Amino acid sequence: MKSLLSDEVVAVRGVLTDTHPVDFHALGVTGAIDRLTLPLRERGTAVHLETPHHGMEVDRQSATLLYRAAQELLSNVYKFAQASAVTIRLCCVTQGMSHGVQLKVSDDGRGFDVAAAMVGRHTGMGLRLMQVAVVLAGGEMIIDSSAAAGTCVTITLPLD
Image 1 (cartoon, one colour):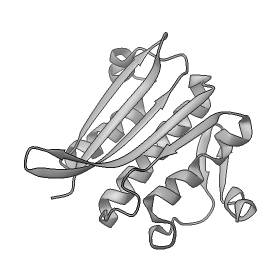
Image 2 (cartoon, one colour):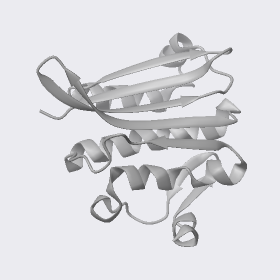
Image 3 (cartoon, helix red, strand yellow):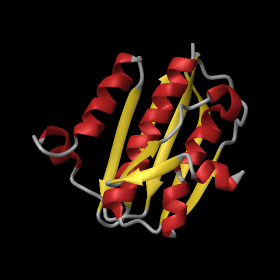
């Protein structure tokens, strides 16, 4: 199965790209995101995938958004972070009376200036577009980054 999966995700100019359509029914959102980590693993980056609520029900629209967000975040780790380790956590969260799904991608890389990336003309376009998509879906995106601690991006989408 590993050889089949590794043929489906490639890094082209640092962007993790699927060569086949994503089948959330067969892989689930967790399996699809795990598949994106193969170029990082092949490069020697330690990848930790945490799914404490494995098998959770996520609608197709949210699954697609989480997958595309993971694709952008992992591509950024691959291209820029110079990280030795990355942790991806996908879980259910409760906020008051409502429930959500949360994707958290953390790395131990070199970090970046979040404010500059979110307003610059030539940087951060993927992050800004992702933030717009998350907000339009009723969710929230938080970016925390520093040279000393790496980067952590948390995306929370409503399930209710």
